[in-house]
Image (cartoon, rainbow, N blue to C red; front, side, top):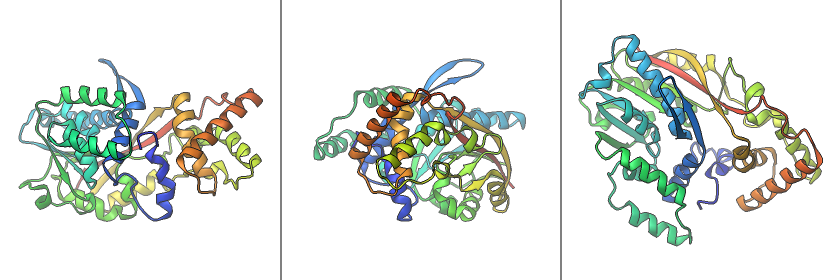
Length: 362
């Protein structure tokens, strides 16, 4: 299980109208965390430089934006007020929660509908005493071992979260209310890192529900993927790795092998524009501002090993299992390297572009 990329389930699940590929059993959540700690990024700021796992990397930008917003409005009390509450919506395995805990002293509530994701999150925050036993049983069933890199990541994470005021709640973010939060008063702020796009068909209901658990004037800072929302400043076709000449060449190679291939220009094409999202949010409890997107540079090695199989799966109209897909990926890359001297010359399409929205509760 840990050898397979759960994102490979995405296309297949979308065809079955399943909105989220990460609501499965425990090993799926563990694999998600393994991918997170394997795809590291360098976060450079005025004060320091840090290598962060990919979801901590994007979450850290949301936390920075949140703190900047609160500072501008002289609401920095949320950073030191232990009576305030900040929500991490769609918290998954607690990676964004970790970034919030670094920045805010008040209560933090991580919310996710996946029980297995929350099992991992609670373990990482010292709230799941039975986790190692449950994980060992799950690994034994599929004859797997826990990667050392993942264990090291968890150990580092847990050293940072020994003392905290974090709680986790299993709930659908589309139907939030104060009763389910077990809170008497509304929260001071919220973030959501790469989660709200999974309920995009229910955005009106979702944003109305989120607004109901936030104080008037409270900020919701969230980011999404370019598969769902296209950035006006950094449009996918111009900057995303999915539209590089490498992907075009891969499509040509697949055709040579007899596959029925879609145009690479339609590969996970964004569903919405930023303005369309803003209009939906504005109509459902918030005033929405389009923020500068997060540009998430993709290392060539990760594109070849991790992202390219996803692209191949999206390009072909044939069902193929994960093992076959990995073999096909390696064969195509090898043949391109042998035959073409321009296979890696496209230096512009090297990003995941993550649109960001700053929404203020009316």
